[in-house]
Image: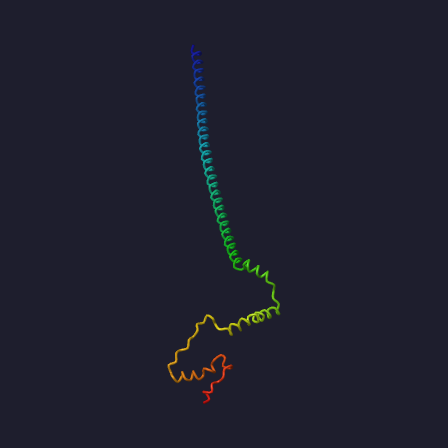
Amino acid sequence: AEAEAAAEAAAALAKVAAAKERAARLAREAAEAEAAAEAAEMAAVRHVAETKRRAEAEAAARMQADDEDEQRRQATSAAGAAAEAELDTKRCSGDAAAVIAAPSQQSLESTSATPPLTFEAAVESPAAEVREAMPALNSAAIAPDAAAPAVEPAETVNPLEDAVAQADAPFASPDASTKEIPSSIFG
């Protein structure tokens, strides 16, 4: 009976030892699983942080590129506007200079219609004009001015001047050459 009891006790101790070993193994597995879970969680956190950082960096780079593109577009637009304004200024200046320098169409037509004068024609033209104007000048010099008012002689109040005028009357008349000189003048 003692041998059986000892055998049973040994079997029970073996079972207890196996149970303890199994429990220790389970504990180790649980710790390993917990450590793996913590590592996976930390890896996930790191991945999320890295992904967020990379997304922020890409967004910042994209915003900077967009700003640089906008600045380049504005600079190109400003340069184009300045070049267009300079061309307009040059075009206006050229048009004004062309208007000032170009002769009128009427002067061009008159110039093209008038034949060029030779030296003989240039000398003869003023002389011909003078010869044509001479008769009119002579007529104007000989003929009395019709528009000029007639000047009436002032009345003589001096008897001596009146007597002298009466004595000179036969010589002063327009047809004095056809009249006889009065003998009373010679006494």
